[in-house]
Image 1: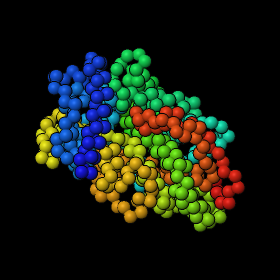
Image 2: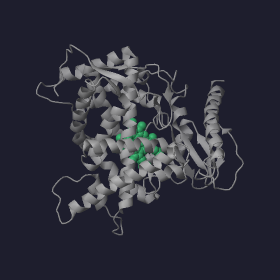
Image 3: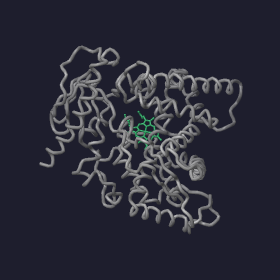
Image 4: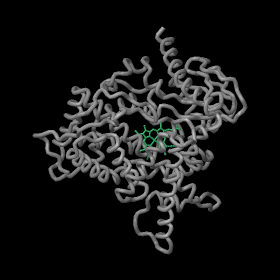
Length: 464
Ligand code: HEM
């Protein structure tokens, strides 16, 4: 009974999404990049076997997988599946980004680019920079009156990812670039209507501007490197310029730019949204906020008086905060779906997914499954007290060879922000009941218009 209700809910939400998508696709089929494929009968939705649904999307028959087992199966099987993003999204993210290159090329470039943002040593390098930026942003916001919290926090996460990948840029340049990314992201999940006024059209323009900006950074760096032996520490740009394949071929500007464009995007939107949601959830639940705050105060009390700022060890000791972060990641499921394509006919749960079909891995239904997470729509960090997530049931960062390489960095940024927020500040939303937007990502319509206030009379003084 519970199972069939759940199936109905999933079918229903897929159906609604499809009605919107298919309806619009038909109206603008000339502009929807993949509707040029042979006309296939449009099937609105069709449950095939538990957790597998068939639909017609992006001009192709598509399959949704919605259970931990089926999602895990698709994500872990690189022999059977490859990335399958709609062509319109690929135009925006980049044909030479990770979603457009060959399996081998992906493996090589992923190894090169993921190591600088993973592991103890790499994260220790960035901790201080992240903390300084968080502390100064909170101080500034507290003097600013009403702010769009999401817009502001995105600027901070963007500055951090720019620093990691490119060294720093001036504030106005960074703000301009971040605005272009906002437009780009609206387009990635919008209908591909390339007409003035439509999100996709604006996103194509934003991509052009971003490519031009990154091209000038590449040009400048190539000039700087000419004839100079680098004594300064190599950043990601240097690493991408130096890397060679087994035949000694270096990356072209186009390849470097698409990889940077993808990383700078993936590396700030997501953490910005999750920081906003974790702050909102805590502020809405005083009991959880109090518990999280006490843990942070304990950390400060234990700290030697000479120590300034957080250490990685302290961040790793934030047990309760880590549950708050996991619960936010679960509730929000920032990447609600990722796209794959069947490389050959694949049998899943007795159903054959034919070669060439799109497969949509629907994380959201996994995270809101009441059999795995009782009362799934309630924010409750304590649910993680005795819960060990079984394989496939917790996928905020995906799984397999394409699992998010920035997961540790993202969690570090979120923890550092919440640490300083909890110790000294509070959030007062202007429209607490504001309705939500779901595309491109879940957020309050007003971008969380709020005041950040400094709490008076703090017992615990933090050395900054
Ligand atoms: C809360 C924050 C984040 C969330 C929820 C998140 C989520 C995800 C998910 C679900 C994927 C898997 C996509 C797939 O399977 O096709 C992914 C991939 C990726 N993420 Fe993140 N991410 C976050 C933060 C970051 C950060 C900080 C970075 C930058 C360092 C980053 C860079 C990437 C890249 C480059 C990929 C593509 C990986 C590949 O195809 O091999 N992400 N992310």
